[in-house]
Amino acid sequence: MHKDDRLAKPFDVPDFSESGPIEFTTRHRCVDCEILSPRVETNHTLISSRYGWRLHREVSFATGDTTYEWRCPNCWTLFRTNRTSS
Image 1 (cartoon, helix red, strand yellow):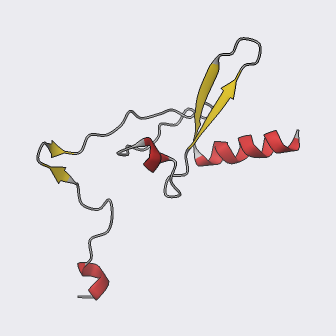
Image 2 (cartoon, helix red, strand yellow):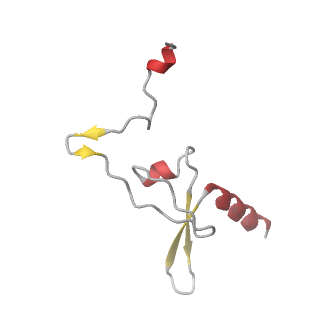
């Protein structure tokens, strides 16, 4: 057995607490391609480098309303490219 095989890797083993299995957050949908986000423990995990999802916040100056938009890694790259080139 290779010594690295003995080490537990993050996310390979479910994390059980006294109350049972961990609870997952709500899954989000990309506003552009409509793919569902992976199941993760927190939104911070979703925006990590492992998953690469991004939450964009837009404030309307006319109404003062705030809009939150989740984007998958591919759509985020396109969105960011299009915003900087316009």
